[in-house]
Length: 159
Ligand SMILES: CC(C)(COP(=O)(O)OP(=O)(O)OC[C@H]1O[C@@H](n2cnc3c(N)ncnc32)[C@H](O)[C@@H]1OP(=O)(O)O)[C@@H](O)C(=O)NCCC(=O)NCCS
Image 1 (cartoon, rainbow, N blue to C red):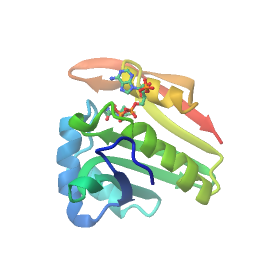
Image 2 (cartoon, rainbow, N blue to C red):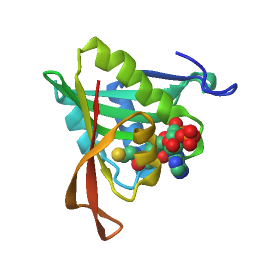
Image 3 (cartoon, helix red, strand yellow):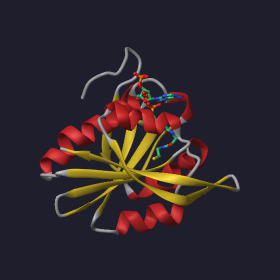
Image 4 (spheres, protein in one colour):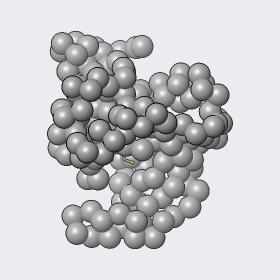
């Protein structure tokens, strides 16, 4: 694990059950398509899912983000991912997903990573593109964000 800058020391670890409530509340504040407590709880109990918190070690393990993924055979799907607002645009999203690609995907011999992203979510699309994900297909009217329908891109990274 490396520092992304001089102040923040992000670290990733499997979520503990008593952190689910906090992670769901932070997601509501951080994402346009947040997961609620029930979705995180169901994911926590799903043997194919993993939930990792991203914590700032420099501030007594404060939770600053979360990522959820599933693994089936040699494919991984990123199901949910956010960085809390005050930690955005500091390289932590890039670092965290980079860790998943280089360490977790490697450990589980993953060949492909998939994710869905709203086609107007420019920060996320730019992040994924920077990590070499490409748009594979479009799901029409997949998301309902603030009452407005928008398409989803399915992006994929071949490892
Ligand atoms: C998408 C998200 C996870 C990015 O995390 P982050 O820590 O802010 O991203 P980073 O600081 O690591 O940025 C990495 C790259 O992402 C892109 N990026 C990040 N924020 C951006 C913004 N506001 N505008 C444009 N590009 C942006 C850039 O390409 C950036 O690289 P650069 O700094 O060299 O330009 C964060 O914005 C977020 O939590 N958004 C809400 C939840 C969400 O949309 N999740 C994805 C669901 S599919």
